[in-house]
Length: 382
View 1 (cartoon, helix red, strand yellow):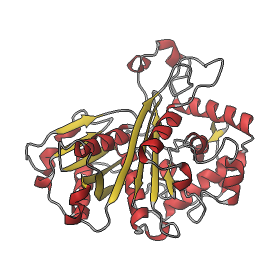
View 2: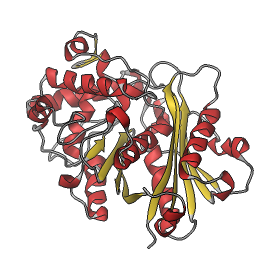
View 3: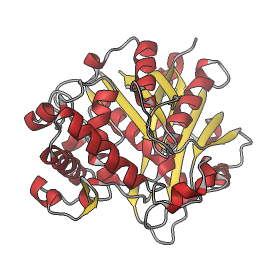
View 4: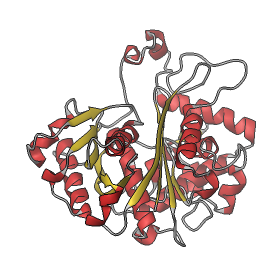
């Protein structure tokens, strides 16, 4: 099977852009990715584009050029971008296309996401009791995890502080003001034990990546990044996930993040010990902590020591969310995972500027997780 490689990445800044449509942000990201790859839009043979807010994101071709290519819209919650990347890579691997693009864009209104629970297959009482709030779920989940594995409130604050500090060095991030752990802990509690500055926020932005056949990469770049594995998993019976209407009893069931992670490592022929830099879903500070273990990067409970030692800092043994993650960038759902890919590509190329991790990183890891219990993992390497 032909291998897919990334030859171009483009990122529109994340934040708030009054008066600028999501499709325009997406078109800007595409143009940046095309320029980075050294290709023109008419050369692209197929694309996959994801969005939550835009009903027909494939309409972006009207801003880029009506070349007649198949542009397939995808949506899979917070795993949307991971799905778009997987499909764009698969089209190359199977020989359907030689040059593809994955695009993500969104423009969320201010405030938390709101919807009728029925759209997620959940009865109305679930929303009437307040359980449809994702902030509530994440607060409950990390509270239980902290109790079971000895994670402190200070460690939550250190994660948030680290991500805001990393975002300060990212000109395309949304929240670029560094906050100390003490400032994070002083912010109001939203859903115990999580505080205001421990949550990400929905916002606006776009990203795109261009891929080609590995045997043709020399035409475009001297630094292709290999797509070693992509994996997507949904929740299993008994798992406690976003929008679960009940709490499981009995033996614990692995989350979809664990399943996707294990599958991706096996497909890539790479183990957690080989990962040089990771981008993990940090919907909140607690999620980053939990996802470190669920993705095999440490054991449950080891996060307390690792974070205190600075292991996840840019200069640490395993840098996590070097661009600020969701906490620093916000989450336009369709684009979020492609932002992760963008950062890993920069790190593997050695072009991340002040965020560049030491040495010569060779393996990068990205992870997405969201409602209703879906997780996507992508492993990249030089």
